[in-house]
Every structure is written in structure tokens, then in C-alpha cells.
Length: 293
Figure 1 (tube, rainbow, N blue to C red):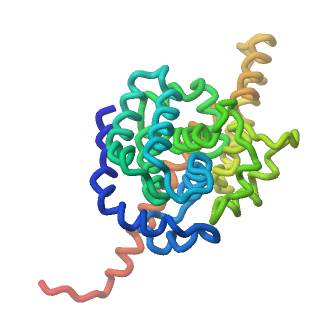
Figure 2 (spheres, rainbow, N blue to C red):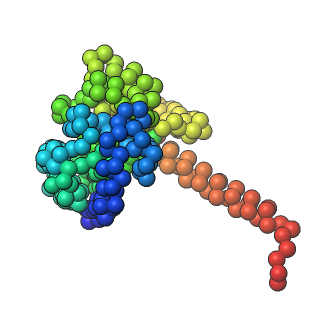
């Protein structure tokens, strides 16, 4: 918690310097967030445009959040984690680092920085990682989407911030106002994730837009090990039929029991191979190079 608190407080030091650029660009909107994206030093990534969707929800048609609106946002966020004292402390430290803006108001660029500091603090918090969902569900989604625990936690928190009604769903109507890369991802992945066409998507449906493609070699290894494990269970003479059925059912329902160790094994072997290959290339490039003795 202490390391997360320190990380969360880091943006406070730059809030004063960011105030000028943020307020100067807050009057522009539309297109790719007006011209503010050109003057901003923040990464032009999904989180930026997700934060702008949140800003538009809380600020309405205004280009500035009032101090009162920002205070309401902080209170709303804190209530989301009121069940976890440790996490509430992490989130409160983020809010405190930006507390001065509750007196002066908040520009669009400043709000993006607030969201970044929030997501970083929460996603690296052990309290949130262990309590955001059931451990088996977390392991399943990590294996299915090829995400690590921090990436899954970050996505979970962002989804919660976009869930303005606190009903476990995100409204697709809101995404029609998305800009930049988030608009592309909405059209390419999120829009079609609404399986029942009710205009709302669940966290797992939305998380599909974060899924990373697995290398073909890793997929083949996982499939081979999974198949071998099932074959071994079915052929084991020391297991009775009922136990075989139970074990195979467990592997089918929780493939991460095999896929996660297999993925770790693949990554370890690949890292050793890549390191050896790099050393060989360095040694090869150094051959014939004269060095003074």
C-alpha cells in the first residue's frame, strides 16, 4: 500500500506545471479533442480517451469541471471501494494529491492526469488485485485474455469508472462520443460485443477489447499439454472412472490450471532462447573487430 500511495502522489508535483497547458487547451473540443492532444505531453492512448468520456459525463457540455463536480467525482470513486480500508487509503491519497483543484476547478488535461494516477495506484494495489473478483475468475480472465494481474486490475477499475449507474454494465450510447483510438476500438471490437443487443455490455464483454493475441507457438504448446493431461488422466490405470470424469471436468472448466503453467514455461524457454540468440549475434558482430591491447 505504501508504494502505491507514493506512486499515486507523484502527479501532484506536476499538477501546477500541467495546469497551464491543461487550462489553455480546455477551451478546444471536438475532432481529436481539439488541439489539446497536440500540446499535451501525456501518451495518446486508450486511457486518455476513456478519461475524456468520463470528463464529458461529469462536466456535461462544459470544458471545465467545477471544484464541486470534482469533489463529487472523488466521493463517488471512494464509495466504490468503501468495503476495503486499505484500498480506500490508496484512493484517498490520490484525491488528496489533487485536492487543490476542488477549489479552483479542473481542466480536461488535468482530469486525464487524475485518471492516470488513479488507475496506476489502484491497479498496483495488492488490496484491489486480490479483491476485485474471485481468484479463479481472475486467473481465468488472465489466461483467456493474455493479461497480467495489474493489467486486468487496471481494466477492471476503468470499467468501473465508465459504469456511471453502478449496475455492472457500460452503456454503448456513451461510446458514440468516443474520440481517437477508443472510437476505433469501439467500432472494431466493443460495438459487436453486445451479445443480447440491449445497448449494455458486461465487464467480460468489454474486456475482450484488451485481449492480447497469443503467439502460435504458445497456443500450440498449451493445446498439446492440455490434450496430453486429459489423455494421461483417461489412460491412468490407478484412477477409477468417477475420479477420471471429475479430473477431466476440472480441466475443461478451468483450463487455466494447465494453460497458465504452460504459458510460463513457454515464456521462460523463449526468454532463454532470445537471450542466447542475442549473445550469439553480439559475439558474431564482434569477430574481426580490432581492439587495442
